[in-house]
Length: 182
Image: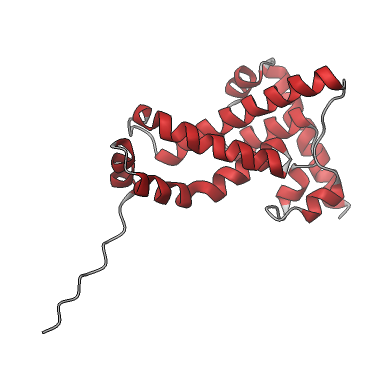
């Protein structure tokens, strides 16, 4: 009789995370492959720039490798991961903005319409979101998509709670206007 090794069953995420915590690079690669698309998507929505989103997504996974021991399992891994992602993207944007402000004094807005339409990682509403002005885009993504409260957003972005609500309202108005004109 021919003995065939059975295919290993796919690991549950908790077991995968424990293997990553013990330094298993194969498990880390699997975790990366499971989450890279959503992490990149969130970075792209927040940063509105493909190259910066790719850089930030890679930085997220560098931080995950270094900080995985801090994940205690009380929340879902994806919740922790997307919190890390938001923090990395916001930090990345601040670093880029500080450099840009030294060179040119402009308020960065989102992608232009043509760039958004040409972007491979975007479809539907995302093509409109990346066109929003920076602060309105960040508040909208964090509040409407990621589920943060305005108090949390205000703290993360260094703004008043009222400003967060105002930027969210501005984003909704612009999105509705653009959607109706398409």
